[in-house]
Image 1 (cartoon, rainbow, N blue to C red):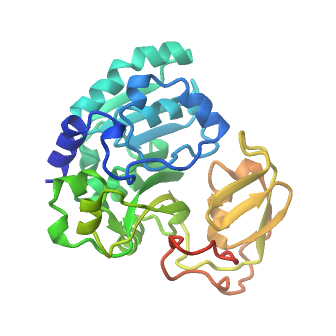
Image 2: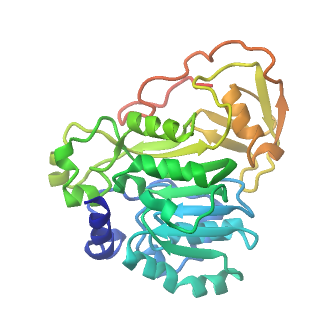
Length: 347
């Protein structure tokens, strides 16, 4: 039901972003200057059919090869195409012909606007990426924006993403999550599914899928609780809390199941474009320029063995172990709708 309903809901039922009945498939976060500039260069017809729930513009992607899973009408792909520049490339994959038609119809327009052509759009099911002409270990970054919740075999998406990423590559994506498993009886409702709610993963199941695929230490970048303004939809889902969240998953060997302390630290140089004052690795790692920042062995690897390495000074090694960072792990990772931000951070 999932793929057929997605094609119908996003290809025929919805004619534009204004037709959505909840804010699950909407982005609330304010974009930075680079994304705002890039968005101004996206065709209005493309922007009018945007259904993302987050900002998927990771740092330090100039020259990168990017795969956009569920690229829709192409807004994120065309933003990323500008950020990677003429030396980079963005490939979008989507299963809805009507959405793909919009993206493809404006490729020449965007190439003229940008001064270069570096996009391709493939029709395909992101649950079956093996069927597409995509070479293993050929992408630096894979992104997705509020699409994985729409597919039935979510584990297959994570497995394929891990296979397609280069060593040190990253799956950086936004989606909708539930604070408990959604009842099976609700999953077949076409509106709940199309609004990105009934297919939302319980966050614990997401972590299990990601780790089984090879992403040993998923990192939460940002999240927000979702309000469901449609009374009929809210009544059907009473008791279930939903969050829109952005995660980053690195393809790295040797990541440990806990945040282990080796006495390491880094100093951010402030040299990433658009991030002169600080770099945010995840919700618990906001590193100010010039300040020594203690971190665990996994976080060290996420900086030292990825595209971020040139922008940090590294202190320490893995020769001495001090145990697990206090306060790490366990519990709902998202910020409750009625709670203030935590006073202390995890490693």
